Length: 219
Ligand SMILES: Nc1nc2c(ncn2[C@@H]2O[C@H](COP(=O)(O)OP(=O)(O)OP(=O)(O)O)[C@@H](O)[C@H]2O)c(=O)[nH]1
Ligand SMILES: [Mg+2]
Image (cartoon, rainbow, N blue to C red; front, side):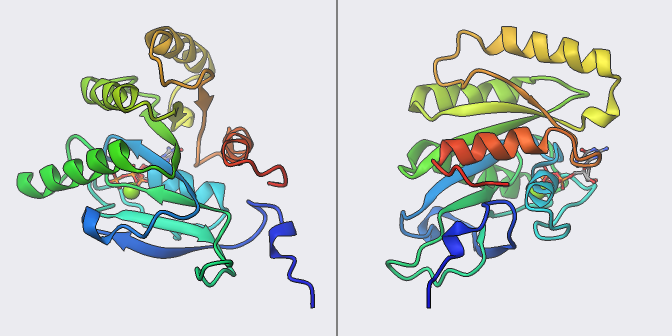
C-alpha cells in the first residue's frame, strides 16, 4: 500500500494537538521545523491558528487575556512521531506577553518560557509576531522584536482583527508598521493583514508558512 499522506495539501487536512509544554524541560526533542505565533495577550494567536487549519476550537480561545498558558504544539494528523514518521512541520501557539488576568508571578513565568523558547530553539524556522490592528506596535512588542533581532530568529509581522478597523486605517497601519520595522535585521519584509473572524489574509499566511518550511503543496 502506498502511504500518500505527504501528498495531501498542508492546510487541506486535519490538524491535531500533540503537546502542551509548561516549561522548557518538557520541550519535545528537536524534530520537524516549527513556526510559532507570538504576540500580546488577547491579540488573536489561538484564533488565527484555528482559522489557518479550519478547525474552530482546536486551540482554546477566550475573551479573557491569558487563555493560552503553555507552548501548544499542533501538527497535521496521521504521523506516529516515531523516527521516519515525523510530521512535516509544527505550529506552536504560545502564551501572550503583557497584561493578562492572572497572578503576576504566573505571567512572569509564561513570559520567561516564551522568551527562552524564542531565543534557543534551533528548529524554530519563523515566528509570526501578531499585532492587534486597533493598537499597533507597543513597547513590549518592540522588546520581543529586539530579542528576535538579537537572536537572529526570522520573524514576520501579522496584523490581526482587521475587521475591527476601517479599510483605509488598515492601509495606513500597514505603511506605518513597515516603516517601524524596516531597519530591523531579522524582520521578513512584507506584513500580512488578517482577520480570523472574516477569514481574511489566511491564504497569504498559509502560503508564507508553507514557503518557509519548504512545502509547495499547501492548498
Ligand atoms: N473581531 C475579531 N475578534 C477576534 C479575531 N481574532 C480573535 N478575536 C477575539 O479576540 C479574543 C482573543 O482571541 P485569542 O485567539 O484567544 O487570543 P490569544 O492571542 O490566543 O490570547 P491569549 O492566549 O490569552 O494570549 C477572542 O475573544 C477572539 O474571539 C478577529 O480576527 N476579529
Ligand atoms: Mg491563546
